[in-house]
Amino acid sequence: MKSILKHTEPRSQYFISIFSVTFVALLSLLIRDVVDHKVIGYLLLVVVSLLAMFLDILPVLLAAVLSALYLNYLFILPYYTFHISSPEDMLLFSLYFIIALINAVLTYKIRKVEREMQLKEAKVKTMKLYNTLLDSLSHELRTPIATIIGAIDTLQQESVHLSEDNKSKLLSEMEKASMRLNHQVENLLNMSRLESGYIQPKLDWCDLKELTYKVFDSLSEELKFHKKVVKTDDNLSLFKLDYGLMEQIMYNLIYNAAQYTPKGATIEVKIEHQLDLDYEYHEDQKMTCFITISDDGKGFPEEEMDKVFDKFYRLQDAKTGGTGLGLSIVKGLVEAQKGKVTLENKEQGGAIFKISFPAQTMNTKDIGNE
Amino acid sequence: MNKTATILVIDDESQIRKLLEITLEANGYKVNFAVNAKEGLIAAANHPPDLIILDLGLPDDDGQNVLKQLREWYNNPILILTVKNAEEEIVKALDNGANDYLSKPFRSQELLARIRTALRMVYGQQNEAIINFGNITIDFNARVVKVANEVVKLTATEYTLLVLLVKNEGRVLTHQYLLKEVWGQTYSDQTQYLRVFIAQLRKKLENDPNLPKYILTESGVGYRFNTG
Image 1: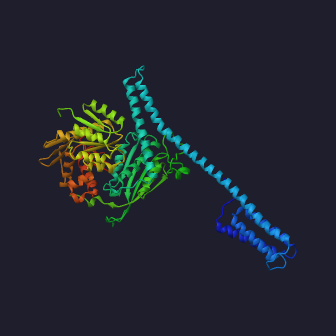
Image 2: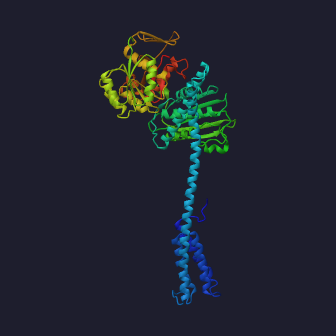
Image 3: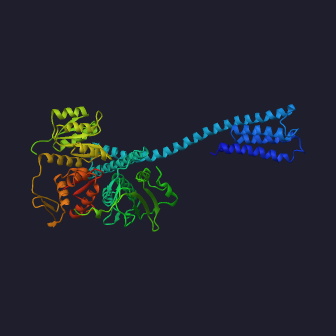
């Protein structure tokens, strides 16, 4: 809801108040000789009342004081003196302040009610977000739990005879469900670690080529029907990054690609670094390490691209499963190492995640044979 | 091993204790339990077991303290159980004298393999001059390594590193330990050497260096040699 009473900065409030009163007073100077000073008095009263609707109490009071002074000095005979003779003029003066005060009180009340309504609305909004999150989370956690409990019940049922084949099928479902549960809990723990600022990268020399193959290997079940490509220089340099965090980043991105691309799709990881032939290893000198993870799936809807790294965000047409945590964790872990991650769609179709890190780099040939 | 090995499990989670009891007994071990640090230390002193499985997250004391106290007199293997992503904790425990670790959740097969390895280190030290695994042969006397009957040329450092890994087969060795043993004390944080030499060894020994079967990486901790 937009406020009826817009909130303006205090300084510009005073400016508005002085400006409008002075402006009307100056205009009135033109008609000073043809109308009674009371008319001008009412005009200024209207200005003060209008200001009282939008401004805070102090600028309104300032407007009231100014109006009274202008009226007295410029419009009440004798001109250019501060002299009040008639009780009517006295009354007019006090009216300025009464109006100003009444309006101020009313304004204050309206503002209070508005604030309360805004708070309520914010609360409703948070609740809604919380509920969606809770929905997807509880779904993600309960599905595997339901699978496990159900399978155990069937296995324990004495009245039913299960073939060995079906028994082993149930056990394998339980295994899959446990793995899924483990993965989600892992994500939640990582998220809370990131939120609490607990993650402090432990930099060490990383062989990113080895790491990539290791992650591919640990996801071999999910990638059974995918083509995996790793593109790196044969003598890829070592980079000083956090091995554990890098593993999780790659795991989440490759896992994500595996989930959202069809069977037979290709997932490609490319690692390279900024080419600089004069580079010599030095503790303070960093080069940029580039990692791209791309697939030839259908890519991301353009209008949702900037939201995919948001916490709990899930694509509009996402199939069930997933909590919207994976990519936001990737972003958090990349940024914890002072890196950047972006997402683009490839021209020929498919998504491409680009990560870059400033990192100390070491040519492996320098270490060579001993 | 001609006697039944006794294992002491120090863990406060009753479900884990139950799981370990069934798994270990089914595999022929005799199992005793302690539910906290105090009980654990007493149980170990009263009936020194052949191996201790120690959970690092105990209610009454830091598992690292228990480990240090045990290591003052207890020389048999100690396996620790930890939560995931606790590499620093793991490295600390290995430095404090733990023989190996498992992060929860772990697979039973993995646990049993770790126990077998740890017990073998104590009771069945290999003293053969020549060992074979897969298509690899190492002749310690001649300092010759063969892959599929072809002699593979290793540099002196590569050979030293390989022998150290093979002698500790099945057991995780930390980066610091490997660097200290192979390159010397002053190199203990120069992990770049390890990365390069491990990659070189894999290139020379593994069928597919990208999917190593023998020299395995333990993220953030070290390397483990596995004869498969």
